[in-house]
Length: 406
Image (tube, rainbow, N blue to C red):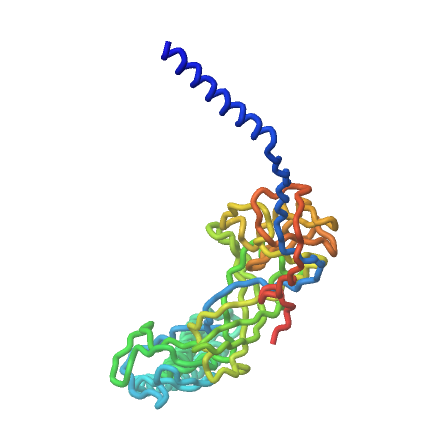
């Protein structure tokens, strides 16, 4: 009986507690529902504008003399004397004597040749007298008959005349050899290396001195086939201005030159052709810094691209670009994010005509005033709402500055 009473009391208590909880639940105030605001990203934009850009085609090369040669001995002999300026770096004008081979043997050869010529001429005169006497004797003893050549001593005359010609030729050669003992500068230039000295014995063909021309210097400049297409129309690789740049100890130097020829051949491996530029050494204002062997950067004046838009590379949506894609000659279709007047994203395809460092040149797909998005955002889609913030247009880079060559 006690157990039943206890059970009833527990049930009543549980019922009372449950009822109280229900009443409290129904009477509690409801929390106000607040919608979370949508987050709108802020992006930087700039108004694109078409410009005309005078291209500068980059290249590089080593400064070399316009002409270089190895002077060699033409006749054998011992070196008798050399010029006081017979040293590396010394300059000579055309015809200046660099060294002389001992002339004793060659002076003797000239004297002997002169004597042989005099003897040959005397023999010719004697033979002419004999031929004249033979003709008179024939006319006296065999008048009316036809004389033979031998009777008229014609073969002897021909032999005597030939000996005179040979003697004259030998004398000419002896005098020529005497002149060849003097090794002269073939053109105005400087000595690059010497291979002999006083007392050395030279054989014909033995190298004596390496000699480089002065006045004009040349630089061989590689240029890709695609870059070649950006050269000024009608230039055909010649008569174009080019600037050479070099920085030494933090100080920049620039020299002006011009393209003088195109070598006219394409290397298969690099797909490049070579232009040859010429620099006037006399116009060097660097205090003698411009010398053969100097490595310089070059800027070749190219054609003008009209009505193109310069867009920073970071503004383009396509990623994973390879080195080939990023080459200056790449020409392809890319995607840009534009921001419309209502601050919504508009994805547009554009055509890139050329790369300039960190910028790309777009020749179609954009118009003046289009606002280009510079901020990289994940998941950009057409119609996406953004907050736009005006940014400065890209500054001119060295590649896109007008070709005002010094």
